[in-house]
Image (tube, rainbow, N blue to C red; front, side, top):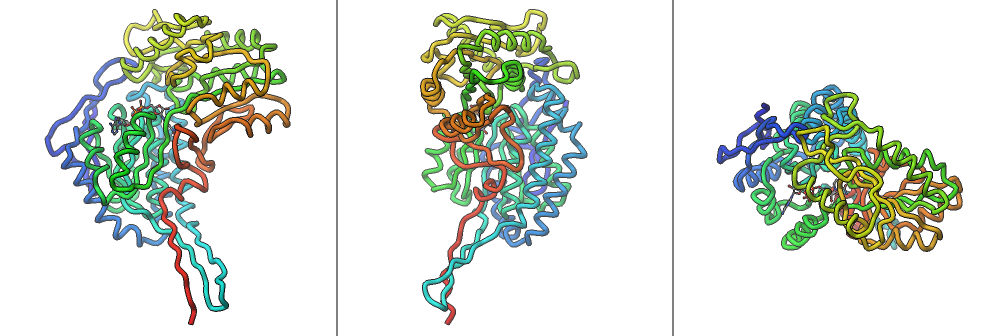
Length: 478
Ligand code: NAD
């Protein structure tokens, strides 16, 4: 049992009410720890700390910000095993995946350690000999960051690292399911020497914290990763104080497998990507449009790949897929699959809880075929271990079907033709596109959605811009 504490103003603290809530391991259903149930007063204390710290931090020179961020990155890398264990125990993903997430988190801090020194401005020639237009960038101020639980350290790192690199301070609220993993990153920030109040973490149920954060004029920016409905709620709230916004919201990624694709490679990589983190990934491929000439071969390879997957507690190194996060998600996924079968789709494999596992929120990796375009599963983000495979015959038809939804986060295609790769990636409406690969994000590349999947970009050369305001000065040199 780990008793977590929050980080406010450089100190590890309990809730001002003394209340805590239990943290559950979804693979065993056991209580593995507790975290403070933050009150509105705690939220306000975190904002106060961040506001006071901002006045100093914004003036710290970029080389020093860079040095401290690099130290955070190194500490995270040193503690990779310990942090990965928190992730696996709190959210259930296999240990190797958790370790990959921690390494990616360390890379994000490393990347922004460099970006801190590259906040370049521009000089635009004036209209007269003696005038100059000068554009510089300044930190936006206090930032609030709220994240989902499925990548508990990476999602928060993509907000903390660019914010701090830009000279902002931040109040973070991790998802209630995964406080320990996120607090382990906060601990690294503290030990690396980031001044008190630059990074604050409050834990607990959302409304008590987020309502006061959203209403506070001193919070100039919100960065949220989570579902579209909660994103819309926060967008409405942010209108009151005109906060800057980054929204990383849900996805329902289409995959187009063209007739000339390497079918075996495509089916195997699609299934491995699909069932990573039990399908609970925003970038997860979900709607598989496979050319009718290769559909049978694709389905056969997909089924063989899935049937050999071992489910269980992610701390067992042989396990390839863990549980869903909680009973609510288990019911939601199970209902969606049952409904799509009732609606006429064919269940290829899975579709139930695994009989051999008695505890934990497990659901078998599931493949559904021949769902109609208006089937519930084709319209709603399943956010679980479900792949829906359907045939197509014509390029324009498949692009129209793939683009038909209001989601626009990730999309993928498999083809051996450069022409088709270009044509397909140009036509797909998404912020991130994988061609013959399912790797959708890295520290050096911009990640984010179009349409209702969100606004703004995290990572790469664009990530830091979200935390900077441009300032234009017209200099008349007389
Ligand atoms: P969620 O929206 O239910 O929760 C996300 C966070 O918001 C959690 O911390 C939650 O406690 C908090 N929250 C819930 N209600 C709130 C409220 N009324 N006010 C303020 N905060 C509130 O999402 P989830 O189930 O945790 O995560 C799954 C969703 O997140 C999926 O839709 C997935 O696609 C999306 N996601 C997107 C990305 C991305 O980068 N685009 C990454 C990961 C997950």
